[in-house]
Image (tube, rainbow, N blue to C red; front, side, top):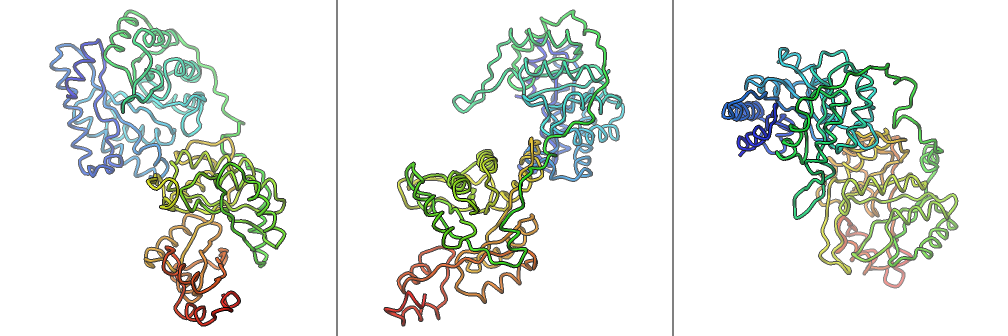
Length: 531
């Protein structure tokens, strides 16, 4: 199949074909249990492409395709030495398969691209090297670099060509190429997508037809591009149209201008400029913090919930914990309620509970950034699970990340970039909390999870209602909680024996010790006072 696809592009007029090795680094293949076959897979990809060229009976170059070592969501999690090792392994195998050149493509970070360039120089120094970064519609890479910065940093590295590919369609990439060409003397390369994709009947479809695509590729050549082609969505028909359009054209001459990349503020480096957390300041001073709890109301009105929050403030609360939905009902989102409380109840901090079961990473980021923009800073990270009772009994979960992943995400936002390493205009200033439970059904797992959460850099811990202080002390000792890390202890008054028994037997993660159950039973009419 792959050989036949290569043949179709050759028949369409391609002068260079790329190996089917994009994403074939050890780290990416590990997702499929194939990490130990990385060299074998890349060697096979090169040989299949070479066989397609032999069958074509004309001169066609084979380019070894090399992608970033990890998916964009994992960028920054591998050490530079590990990245370089992965690139060495892949490029060496492609070279063994007799490719004519190497194309480093769809890189979103200059730092990672530089590791790939260095690896290629070590294991395949005689092969021409083309480097292509990918740019978003704001004209920056995923890591926030501009075409001017890319050109300035890569201009003197001896590349055969420098360019851009993927993400953008022909028009968007044209503007990137125009700016890139002003800041490098290297030959330019351009491989746009065939327009933006749409998802139809389970497949991605691209909107740019071959004639439109080829017309813009001609403009690339007129800007000085020497290597042109297509990325996602470009079929043999697109390449056939491109080949016919650019045949006989010569790249236009270019004049480089010095890159003015100094003095700007990189995205994510400006401070959020918010006042220190009143909760953390109070805790640091050795004072108690009293936190009430508020559940999101059903329906579209939250007036009563805001009045309840104000009442909690009047009774002495310093903050209010906005709980996650407890039932599958149509109700106000916790993030929206947190914003209302934060804005309408002076001197009361809203602590937003974010549960990861119901939202994708993109939705979580959107909610968090939106809440932060309206003043919500304190967040309790939970994994959670779909409520089984309510109007939507068949509701399912998403779980793109768990609570630990959410903590990491929020730390990334505080450092000025999202989960994929894409720079934010300004870092957030979240105060990040996590939950530990001395009544967890799996104590060993709770201990391990607690250690991981602390290592990830949380600002406070919170517990569910605790009725066994000895169990809490044992958990804190086992986790080795730092003395300086604040702990908010959950308290729920027991109304009567029935209430205590219900919590003990029917509420997951809650435990009421037998001596307390006996006291509540014996209290009878005085149970509320004892509770």
